[in-house]
Image (cartoon, rainbow, N blue to C red):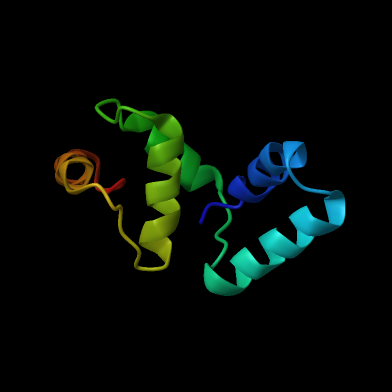
Length: 91
């Protein structure tokens, strides 16, 4: 999971959970899913992937690639493979 997802979820969960509950939820999540940083190369690759419908999804994909992960949407995966063949990045 891309690192920026954690603060986003912390913010989203504020409506339904106390601070301590949000921290517990997200700590549990980090035990289940590796957290990957977003660096310059990932951002540039995602920005260059013009055929990708969602920039944040492309960043998630770049992070997933680092840990050997994959997207759950087969159609999007096929489209990403096409992009990768053009830019050698975003799968």
